[in-house]
Length: 119
Image (cartoon, rainbow, N blue to C red; front, side, top):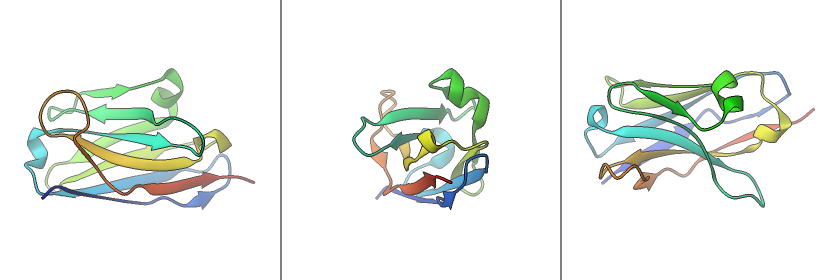
C-alpha cells in the first residue's frame, strides 16, 4: 500500500521560508518520480515541481524556479520542497505525489500540508 505523508506546513509571514517533507512507503522510492502540487481555495490544482529517480528536476513556472527547491533523500524515502521568500499567493495545501506507473501522471498523493502566508 502506497503511503505519502506530508509535513512541515505552517502559518508564516511574507518573506519567511519553509521546508516541506514527504515520507513515502509502499513502493520502491528510489525508482520513481515524485513531486509536489498545491491547491488553493477556489482554484484548480497547480503543479509545483517534480524530481525523477535520477534527480532531474522540473519546475512548472519561472516564479517557482526561483523560490522553490525540490530534493529527495532515497535513503530516507523522503522528498522535500524548500520554499523561500514566501508570498501570500503561496497560501495553499501542498500535496506530495508519486508517478508509480511511469505515465507522467500522479498515481498516488498524500493528505497534504497547509501553508498559510499572511501578515
